[in-house]
Length: 229
Image 1 (cartoon, rainbow, N blue to C red):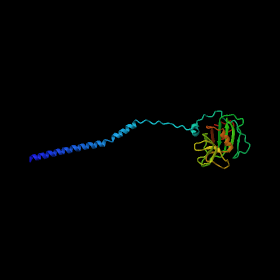
Image 2 (cartoon, rainbow, N blue to C red):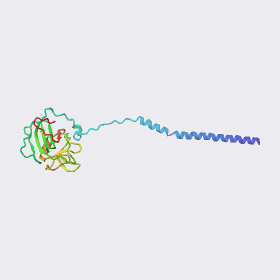
Image 3 (cartoon, rainbow, N blue to C red):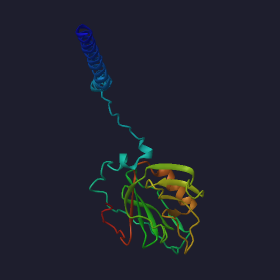
Image 4 (cartoon, rainbow, N blue to C red):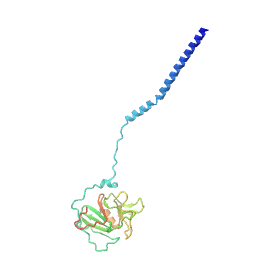
């Protein structure tokens, strides 16, 4: 009897020991599985660390489409002053223009616009060669004042906003303000553009170049000897 009891105890002890060993092995496998995702994360981090940097490449806009590219055109000479004012004897009314460049030397072209006087003047080498009555922006879209280089020329332009024709268009701003041919009548306004008679617009278009300055003021009139800029 004693031998049987001792045998059962030994068997029980061996069984308990075997179960304990199996439990330890299972815990070890579980912990190993729980820690295994760290390996892929480390691999991703290592891959990211050696990725090549992306080089930034600047995009250069064409001169005719970007006002900022030509705003820094060489300044006009210090001697660029008014040397002649056109003699106008006819009534200076809406639809009227005068153009006379006979005998005027080649030189820098500057266009001045005075909103208060509702007029535009074209100077070449300081001599006024053209003048006309204009239409300009209404209260909803006023014509901006300032100095604007001509950034685009389009003889047969059509507004992509309003769908209306803008013959002999000389663009002044990126948001669509321009000088162009228009039906100039008293009391009429524009959406910010400067409208001039058709033949005047054609003559100005022929002589103006990209980068030529257009000076828009509201009440500043020029006289003989005055500096244009």
